[in-house]
Length: 428
Ligand code: GCU
Image 1 (tube, protein in one colour):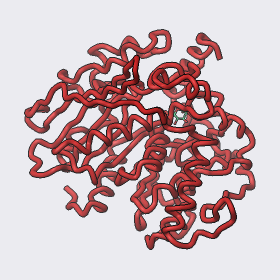
Image 2: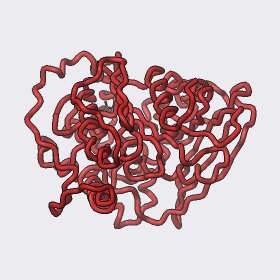
Image 3: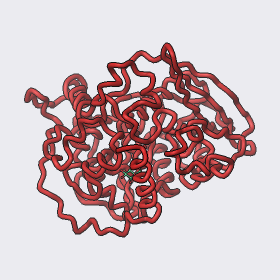
Image 4: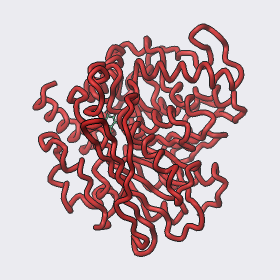
């Protein structure tokens, strides 16, 4: 797609989202095709996986390779140097409720640097290192809260203005523009830290043939192999890079990091959680196609829809499976399986038919055998739970909230409860 066409397409998609058409189309009428899921517990050479060691040493690496080769491409392999700098620490932020830190990660090759601006809040009264939610934001760090001391994220302002149709908001007006998705004070009150950065720091969200963002740092051969690249992997790379920083911060309990993401960033949270086992809990909110939803159901957004609308999110190889979902060597239950034995939570929304809520639930359900291998209880029935009634079994959590696509207070409360439960904390 040329630049103009791409711009118009993005405007169309955003208009589509904001007019809430998702909920008005009756996807329920679409018949789910017959499908058979690829085997989770049989290795490429036919070996039955029956013990955790075989999963860890044989099947898990195989499945990661399959997702890299056919769906997400790889996280950049080149040896990029990373340096972290603390720009500012405010011990009295949010009227004394938080310690606020502005950290910049410099991702460096011999000639160029990409910067990630990380914003961190820690509960001010914390007596020991805190568990922390890590989630990328869409519109810059300043969008998550009205606090005027949060620097406006540069990549959000500097991205090619032709594409940045929110550009008018990239000023003081964008402060707090997405605060309803980020209950910062509540997260702090419950004893958790929160860290965020803008996904555009790693790769601006438009199709440029993998030239900008972190891709600009790759060497020629890697850049040319577009099968290996995807924006989702670039964003996931950001999450794992930040994890390196957490390992050095005395305010943060590095063994209790929860990676969370909404929508396209929910797809990314699952992929990052799958490949980086340092994340303790993985949460995907309304992640849909290419996230928690089973591709083979072809319900709501299909593989072809997503590759057409967002050609850069996945590797070029994934495009081959447009209308050929049954040929995919993986399906998304295998992505959830990669998270085992760690806790995973999938959140859906009733009217978010585009994301196929039942397909999101089924991935979790069909990942059960891997969790069982590790001795964990698993979801026993493939029946969708009632609206607003979370289902937690063993390490798996699921809810379908009333309402449409979005990350709401209800979702956060359940995610906080789930984290409390798995970290043995008393809920507040
Ligand atoms: C579009 C896209 C979804 C994606 C969503 C988002 O609706 O089709 O796959 O999850 O955007 O990220 O907001």
